[in-house]
Image (cartoon, rainbow, N blue to C red; front, side):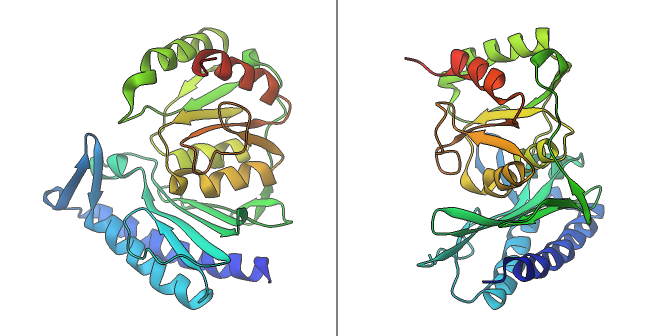
Length: 265
């Protein structure tokens, strides 16, 4: 399997669909928004983008199945599956603010072998394949070297469901706000993770996420020299709905703080 060749083909597809999304934003019709749940939206742009991605990905790797946010295809592959978010940050998109992104990962069994995140507003494409470095528009990137909270800029996200852990979550943010360079909440987990891979953020954590939010970005972080886990230090971060990602120097301290606040013994 030539992972690099497949990655290059998918990258071109993602750039094409990203251009479509960028153009649609110029005359976006907010009357065509559907509400899936509290603060959980989908538009015709999400659905059209996913349909275009699925149609082309089926040609690139016919034997692969799909885990796609909008359910364009629910067919599962025996060996390969694409994990797709056609528009991560839909709420940002419908309000006309950045960032929002396309996120695509390819899993071979339980292992991610390709990850691509396109932040659409800046047209920044982050990508990697099994055995490669991570690239941003053709230039190699890597995680930062900062090793302590006092030197870290930390990203997170706010849940729009499952508020049972909200008080503990706010306590964790209180700690980071008082002791770090600050916190950012961009509204796109895929972008947050890509920025960790690029060394723009030292770390990211969030819960109540889905596989399509994190699969590609988590792969990028690991390929760029970082560490990714769930809140208990395990590897159930793609389907386990919680994720901790950091550069390797800072991970131990960052993880211990997240675990202290958010894991009940």
